[in-house]
Amino acid sequence: MIIVQPVPVTAAMLTASNVPETDAPAWTAGTYTLGTKRIYDHRVYEVIVSSTTARPDVGAVATPPSWLDLGATNRFKMFDQIISTQTVYAAEVDVSITPATVVNAAAFFGLSGNSITLTMTDPGEGVVYTETRSLQDNTIIIDWYTYFFEEIAFLPDMVFLGLPAYGSATINAIVDGGAGDAKVGEVIIGKQRTLGVSNFGTSVSIIDYSVKSTDDFGNTVITTRAYSKRADYDVTVETASVAAVQKALADVRTTPTVFIGDENRPETVVYGFYKQFNIVLSTPSISDCSIEVEGLV
Image 1 (cartoon, rainbow, N blue to C red):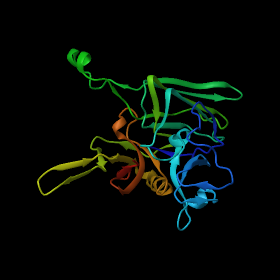
Image 2 (image 1 turned 45 degrees about the vertical axis):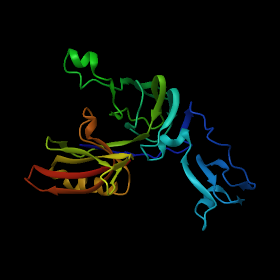
Image 3 (image 1 turned 120 degrees about the vertical axis):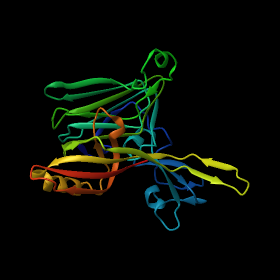
Image 4 (image 1 turned 180 degrees about the vertical axis):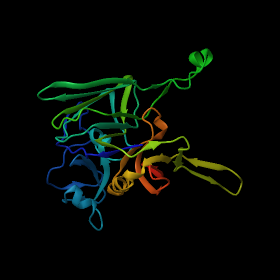
């Protein structure tokens, strides 16, 4: 069981991106009328009053509001802590992040594309890590029939653990969309920490936010909405490390965190918050821990 404590990606840390920030013109001081859209601090705002001179972030929280926050720009949607809002660009998404601190893990959620390439480059030593992974999911291919006739499936999530610990390295990620659009829902970089060993008995599911309503005549209308992943981890931890595990979980109680049961089992990788955890001091050497995690949409 591994958690990745995120290092928030700021605009200063995003040192390169091939995704243009052209969702709307940049905001400058002036008078704006109803329906006008402007970008301020990498977020898109729309005027919802007849006219306003307020700065968008100020107007959005005013009473009554004069601007409506529509969310991050396309370039920054991959860093907004919302998996379902994706950065989308033709052919590939190519970004470089310089965190200026030691990170040894990266996680990607809401992916759509053929492959992802991660490269770490240190100013002094050059390329210290590079790996390309296919996003094609072949686990359903079990015989010749499924090989020829099963639809091609793709992995939406990917994690890279054990990256070299360089404090000044730049992390470059390229998602190859092939002939279509490349999409990235969320990018998390940070420091990984091992809590224990995940066991069989861990359960995974989803929480569906779609609405299904049935009228008096039995007609059902389904409003499709997003869903989030959920996992109940069964973990064995060393009894001598229980206090450290307890503190590690306490430290991320209000921070969206990547929880990894097994990096080779994407169903056990969840980005979100734990709802609760419980540690039973079972024996002097090992203890049993359960962690209930609810993912972000």
